[in-house]
Image (tube, rainbow, N blue to C red):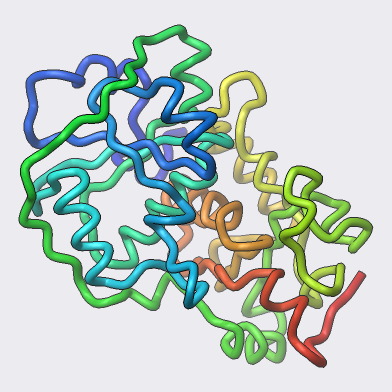
Amino acid sequence: MAYAHPEVLVDTRWVADHLKGSEKIRIAEVDYDPRSNYSLGHIPGAVLFDWKQDINDPISRNVLSKQACQELLQQRAGINDDTTLILYGDFNNWFAAFAFWVFKYYGYKDVRLMNGGRKKWLVEDRDVSKDIPQYSTGNFKASDADNSIRVFLNYVKESLAKGERVTMVDVRSPKEFTGEILAPPEYPTEHAQRGGHIPGAKNIPWSQAVNDNDGTFKSVDELKKLYESKAITPDKEVIAYCRIGERSSHTWFVLKYLLGYSNVKNYDGSWTEWGNMIDNPIEK
């Protein structure tokens, strides 16, 4: 069975075949730490989007603004309105999926993920480069934010009273979900004051949606079984969250584009917001 929207995925071979010869294709690597990834070698012709500096506003603790998004795509990657943008990155596309979500939030039509991300490209021993490409400024115009794919704190709190019509999926690790740990071991200082999860949330770690060997997405049948076994079904509104919104954007992508769920949203405030708010209800 095919994915609901196979057009949003490309494989590594497709990317390798399209590295030259088309001005209507751009490639971008999205990294949490470019020093240990992009700077050591990247897909030839790929620009860098630094997740912390380019995709987020560190002052407002928000995604970048509409204007900043437009300028990033125009100036860094030379994006026009008819350009196909291929995103890939580290951590099996955590941060690339977040950038995909943000660009969709601002109306980018033809943005895609490279299945398997940086991990698969390197596993296959494909060419990498340390050259930083320069492109002429493009004419891409960002749209007003699409709030049908994003929710905020008050919306989530109100959703708790809607019962089974709204399902929340916590995509963190089981130990984060139960409150045994406050953050992944690799990010010991990036955590909320309290551990646990939003009441009623189902725990389906994001990593269960990908294959361990190369980071590619699992089949439709495997994904359907994974989510439907926890009552995450397409007839409901689904809200995905994690710690800071990056892992949940990966699950948002899976549910919306691979399984075709029509009403799935990313709560990017996630546990660092929820777990720090006074009197917010939690379960352990």
